[in-house]
Length: 113
Length: 113
Image 1 (tube, rainbow over the protein chains, first blue to last red):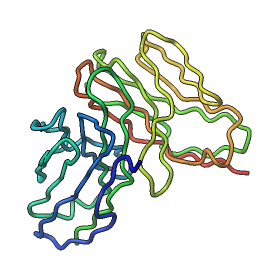
Image 2: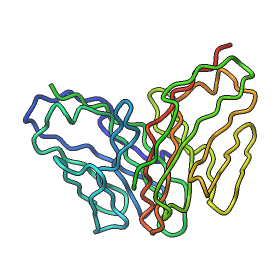
Image 3: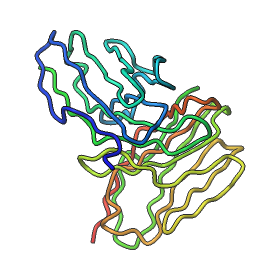
């Protein structure tokens, strides 16, 4: 049981390049999330998807787009990477309904030079 | 109003000590307060959580104290061990079904042998 799987784990981009972070969960969860983690800032929500076919902005959505491809997969796209997007990105998922544990992936380290 | 403020930023204790991490919030719509533990290179994992109708919750060596009137809650780690060295995040959940968590800034704990 893999839980939440993110790829790639490490990536270096040049300013202006685009890339997509992939996330998949095998727990049949309805809700999925993308967070970024920066020193001294905690984890900040970028986008979330409460269910397949829906997405909503979080606290820091600018510069990002997301796609909820199906129930399992939720991708995060940087269309034109900027150095300010250098961060660790975490995908997470949970069952919708009630308050349950949110499960996080192991993170994707992104550096924009 | 959506912020969760966490302190201290870092903490060093000796083995057997009782580190205390504090969090404060403003939005009374929050209805669930989890703590997450994160080891280097890993994603955060749920440690313990509390609802605002309870003043204290214990799970093993970890205790949450909750003061609803002061809008503050704290994590106490009894008989701390070097294996507890990690980053700890408090979080708060909104009264909705989206499962969005608002995280504190994080506390890096080091427990010295």
